[in-house]
Amino acid sequence: MIGALTIARRETSALFNTPVGWIALTAFTFIGGFFFTAMLIGYYSAFSESVLNPQQADQLSVNEWVVQPFFSNLGVIALFIVPAVTMRLIAEDRRQRSIELLLTSPVSSFEIALGKFLGGMGFALVMTATTLPFMWFLYALGDPDSGVVISNYVGFILMLGTLIAMGTFASALTENQIVAFMIAFAGGLFLWISNWVVQGMDDGPLKTTIDYVSMLKHADSMGKGLLHTQDIVYFLSFIGFFLFATSQRVEALRWR
Amino acid sequence: MIEVQGLTKSYGDTLALSDVSFTIQKGEVVGFLGQNGAGKSTTMRIIAGSLGASAGTARVGGFDVAESPRKVQAILGYAPETPPLYTNMTVGDYVRFAASLKGVPDIDAATKKALGRVGLEAVSHRIIDNLSKGYRQRVGLAQALVHDPKVLVLDEPTSGLDPAQRIEIKNLIHELSLGDDRTVLLSTHVLSEIEAICSRVIIIHKGRIVAQGDLATLGGGAEKKVHVELARPEGAIDVLRKVPGVTLVEHDGVHLVVTGERDVREAVAAASIPFGLLSLQGQRLEDTYIQLTTRETT
Image (cartoon, rainbow over all chains, first blue to last red; front, side, top):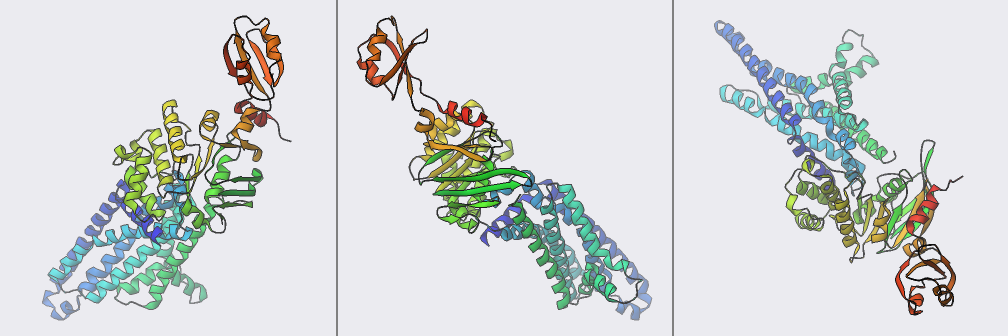
């Protein structure tokens, strides 16, 4: 596993050595901050309106009005930004032939896949950390429910993990980074919105299946502060599946 | 140290390698010779474990590459023709990364040693992207050397270099092969490099081994011709014919050509004729190579 960590460390620092990493980080923080500010303003005006009605004011929760929608919006931003971060993970190695160094070093295909994934994850954690000042701001001015905040962070990181695992796999499929981006983005979008399609549908196995696949559904319940095992299993099983698929793909590169 | 047995590789319908077998002993420096597309890189990639063979086995240091690739890779250094570089890293960081991947215990010391060996200490803080091709080739070598492997597999390490860089890399490989009992398999299509550093040659053509043997055997040919330059050749012919070992003496218009069953220079020199210059014109490696690789295989 040392090999995987070595690869991960290199990948994360490589992301910070390229414009792509910094642009992604800036875009994420800027757009995230923009949403955050907009939600605070919305919360503030709702609060002002309810001054005359103390009962209504009691029901205005910062969790519902700011924390939950903020993370839900971060998810949408991540949907666009994560594929831009993951597209180069393996595709670039293949194009510039540096994959040969990995393939001829004493590390297994799974370690390569895991290393690339963890490299992306390292970047994602830094990205997530840039939202901490926003939370600090909420704690300084209000009284958010720490359970909700934590479960939102857990849900967001698991979602990032799923998108990164899928992006790593997409990046292993091709030497072309744009193609890798498109595959990862389409896959992420499908997971995100698949339950929209079935909303009008009658209850049945098809609806249940597609509903289950939808990331939005699982992220939602975590957004409310509920850490259900089934949601965690959902994300972890996707991550596991794509890690396995990526390692199979890397192994297949040895046979071409 | 390297045993290759019946190696075959096909890409779809194209047969890249067909029943390739050879053995390289510990400490040998072997030249792998062949035209572009003959199967040199394919063979080397299979030995290094970055490509699977369709049939046959490759063993390095007693381990089967297909069965225990990690064990082979831990004792093997491989430098592909295009160095596998992360061009936005510095030279030092890249070699350190390679050392860590290969599980070297003391990464800093190993990196320093490898950079020193290939003469890259001065540029260790530079970004690889900004280096010349010769330097990049050296970074590729440093990567292959960093874990002090028992076996080095170098795929055209001098390709695309200018003559001065070529000589530098050639000398470097020569130094690497000295001592340490390192086994080296080196591919090239530059014959002079093989003649300068290798003790043995394997010639591959269209995916098949067409010849292998000592440089002396492949390069020497069965009979030796000695050119004798004389001021007045008349009379010398009869003397030369009586020299032991000489089978034929001809006059090619410029000098006398003495053909013997072995190198007869010493005998000729002892024959007390007033010669100006003696030179050996045995069959050279180039002749063997051209002969073997231009022959159409059916």
